[in-house]
Length: 338
Image 1 (spheres, rainbow, N blue to C red):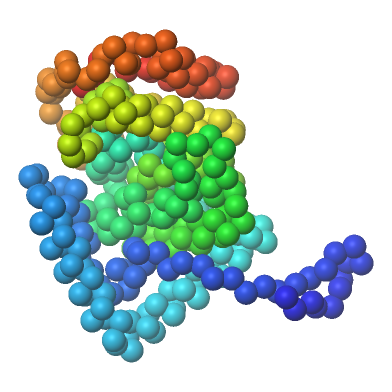
Image 2 (tube, rainbow, N blue to C red; image 1 turned 45 degrees about the vertical axis):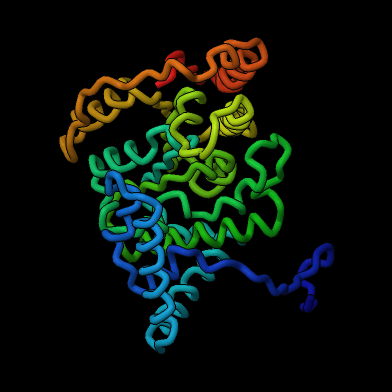
């Protein structure tokens, strides 16, 4: 710590050295990873683990090759300089310095557990509002931004300090600054910005701080039994696996409103026909993108109904619903395992 000349006799000024992360998306962006190809693991139907590993290995080789060049390091230095300036502006509450990155924009966050249709909503609704997700990196706009460990290290615990820890706060904020710099360079003219992140379900108070009423939240929800059955867990589907999903389900959906009322608009979209209807309503409103196909959703029968009908699980459902009700917000509890 280096102490500087005092201006206010009741405070001290100091400079500190901190180590903050360069986001995966930033590294891939500077290295020149193809954004369209980066979406293949999410969009290509039937792609197996080997296919996903091949794409990951290809991107890694692109990054390694780029890191050997002077051009990569010059571009990275320029990007980081801009990010540091924005980070410092936010920490000193310099609204004017933040304005070029946020003015006139609506920041749409797709929250909710994995396997709840969040990617479907992200792709459809962002297309409807002119967000060019297909030419933007997956790692910058979808779940990897920011790194989940900086937001909530234990997704099962109500008492995890997560992003509130000083080091996690700095790391999460610095990664979100990289996202804003990226958006300002690659999608500057977009009035609606979209970011899908399950981890940020635990960080709405942080998003309130950064974006206030400019943030809009779309929360996707699905029956926890269906989440468990479609999660790709290997081996026998035991009650313990259902219990684990239920624990995270209750914690995540209550966390969204546990600390505060979201300042921006919030909409809960239930997986199934309601999700199809929501997407089509957005399409009718904007006349961009495309309608979601009307389809019937498979309803699971063997999902340990006895467990989900139990008093303890019903209390968790009730707790989540009442958490939202405190802020006059409605939260639908899925009654069908689809």
